[in-house]
Length: 163
Image (cartoon, rainbow, N blue to C red):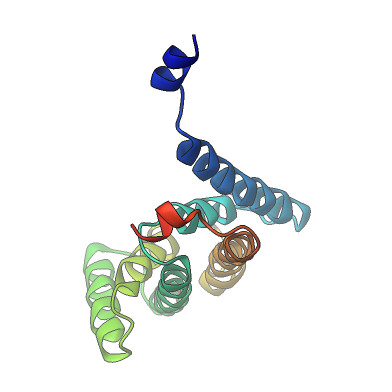
């Protein structure tokens, strides 16, 4: 029976990874809900992205933080002056790429483009800066912070750190 359980059951690494992901996801969810964030789900999503990254969590956290800041700011700026359309959207995505390059943000571009997309294309019925700051940046940053805290308090096993 022990052999079958070993063959069919999850590995020790899978159990640890699952726990290390579930803990910050739940903590982020609870924190976002307790703060009455309207789109609370972005906090646990950000935690999951950081925890399941194949690169250093601190590097990814910086990319996600910087990219989100750039994307929400640019998205809110565009939405404040132009009604969302395919030309404004395409120009915004292009600008995210150029600004990411000029600011030496590298891979943060993908997060900037995603944040701009959410702020610019999803109708929230409230001013774009409110969406950008309160409904995107703060929620994402909360998830990043919780994931980094868990990463510092509960480091990944050595077998996962070298991947």
